[in-house]
Amino acid sequence: MTRSTSGVPAAELAPSTSEPLRLQVLTALAQHRMATTGQLRQMLRPDSSRQLVSRVLNKLRSTGFVDLTPLPDSDRSRTHAWYLTPEGARLTRDLPVLRGRPPYPITSTTAASLKTPHTLTVVRAHLPFAADARRLGHEHGPWDWTPEVSHPIGEGQRLSADAVMHYTAVDGEHRRKLRAFVEVDRSTMSAERLAVKLIEYARLFQYEAQPLGRRKPVSAGPAWLRWYPVFPRILFILTGASRSRLSDRISDLQAMVAQHPLVAALAREVQLGAVILEDIEDHTPSAAVWVPLAGGDPRPWTAL
Image 1 (cartoon, helix red, strand yellow):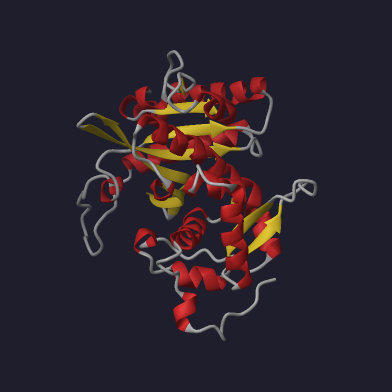
Image 2: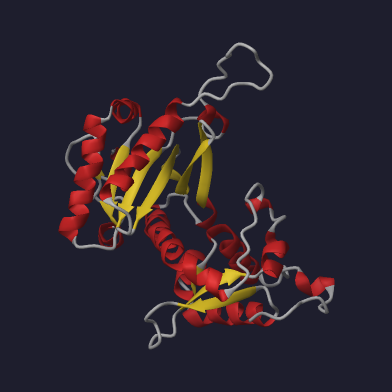
């Protein structure tokens, strides 16, 4: 349970410039919705001790800005997931890095526990990319991974991506800006429902919004151009089952590309790939572990 901060002076409510980690922890929880202490350490201070981040989190909890929920079957390790309270969400809503992000306060431990498994797996999928970028001298950090991005696809429907990733590969003076829609699959839905997600992306690729007030349709171009200079590649990251079952799910994604005309058209223009989460954790995302959904040998995600 969190306590109210109504009696705390305004100067104490704002993150102190002398405590940058405190501000970064609040911002990371606002951006990623939820994270464990270990995930926050890997994200924000990979070379520091767990105790440093833990002290900051406990201080934020004592002032009512964050709270925690225990993870299932984690009694021995005392692992928890941290999230912003409504007070913490209010405090971070005007930060420049979060501009345009909808508020996402969690008002109870019960509500937090319902969101925990998927949200933490999405954070887990982000961390190998961040570690790989640091190793390679590329640019990709906590604010370059935006969870739960939604776009219209027509007929009053919307596509919701688990995350949108921005990544800049640096080779000397050459900078290559990469973007990706990321779908994280924990094997909790049927393989068919997972593959249908490709149809939604194909609809987004083709969807053109019509200006309001026009009697005759006037094309304004693809709606996705409002947000992206080129259509992001689509990456499926799978976990939560045996390797053979995950390989079958990747095969089902490939079958959708081969059999559905809209998805086949998408695959001719957009790079599509799938990987097992444990493979990018063990071998890095830049290893040749990604399966191109349009066919071909495994390769790095940047070369799909």
